[in-house]
Amino acid sequence: MNHLPEVKLGIVAVSRDCFPMSLSERRRKAVVAAYKAKYGDIYECPVTIENEVDMRKALADVNAAGVNALVVYLGNFGPESSETLLIKEFQGPSAVIAAAEESGDSLLDDRGDAYCGMLNASYNLKLRNLRAFIPEVPVGDAEDCADMIKEFLPVARVRIALNDLKIISFGPRPQDFLACNAPIKQLYNLGVEIEENSELDLFEAFNKHEGDERIPAVVDDMAKELGSGNKKPEILSRLAQYELTLRDWVDAHKGSRSNVIIAGKCWPAFQTQFKCVPCYVNSRLTKDGIPVSCEVDIYGALSEYIGQLVSEDTVTLLDINNTVPKDMYNDEIKGKFAYDYKLTDTFMGFHCGNTATDKLAFCEMKNQKIMARTLPEEVTNGTLEGDLIPGEATIFRLQSTSDGKLRAYVAEGEILPVRTRSFGAIGIFAIPEMGRFYRHVLVQKNYPHHAAITFHHNGKALFDTFKYLGVKFDEIDYNHPAGTLYKSENPFA
Image (tube, rainbow, N blue to C red; front, side):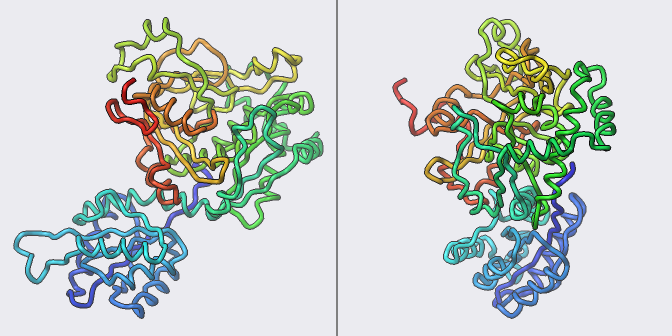
């Protein structure tokens, strides 16, 4: 996957001065050995922290080593002030984990009490208004701690990436799509920069790319990717011109940021002026690690990017679009899968044609059917139609509310291996208790119709990430199982 920031992990052990430092050091070495054996490299800081002077030495050491994600390891109880000051002064994301006791025969001189120390560490983090990743089970042996560090990795990747991210948008949200409009203040709170442009600026740049000598090579690459699905070869040169326009804009406008994503305009005037629709180009950039959202959905683009960082794979953005007809459900879904999905557990996720080729079971380049109802067909070409690949899926979104609060949802399910018999980039989704989730989260909490999609089960990592980014616990929603009521759910229904 392109455009993923490198995470260089480091681990620093801490030791309370009334405990043997050798205990924490020995345990640290065991954690490092376990992590390297299971997952890969991690930098082991040789400085063990007992006091603030040690903290500064350790900080200088990990910075010199290029560490950008830090694990603070309580090999014993730990010095609560020094260890949290390290998190305060370290410029990247941090995690706190702790050592479990090793055996019943080591509870005299080798008892570390890190189970207790974790409580004091968390209390001190709160006192100092600091945020650290603390796993669901934060105390364990060397193997357990290696797994905890692995859990921290996608969260750290997101935090590092957002601090170096710029979102480039083109145009205001279309009329009657107010749901895609949200205050941008929370972007700055997350460390994200945004550059908002007129679509007229984009159109000017597009026209300047007419006759660009690189267009034939991009057309050839598109034709190779599409294969037998290349049903509109006459439009590829305009799509290639548009793709080069976006790529050049990203290069020229990234400024001080390494990571760039795009929230693009795609209607109502796009087709008549650009003489195509941008869907296929959006899919190609997304496949290349530069997510592009439709309808200038800024938080949709951000959500896509977070999904890419967490899953390390291509994502997409879809409308939570239409119900599955009862006859299709009864004939092709009911009782045919390991989970006995109800009709209300299913829905179709759809967009015009923005999903990458490798996430479609089959695909063809076509015109945009909805737009072609009111416009000449020849200006609506450029969508990539096909059914989504079946398998695991996670739907999610990070969103600023109209009053500037940060909110998120996550729900895991699957894309069913059932033909949609419809148009666009589309798939039949099945999520346990989706009907209740739709009513008491998506509708009740005023989420827009766009959902970011990963093609894996990434719920745990996304939930951890949203917590770490500062979304309040009661503002991260998920699909409650049967019998667990939402706050707005009628208990007598």
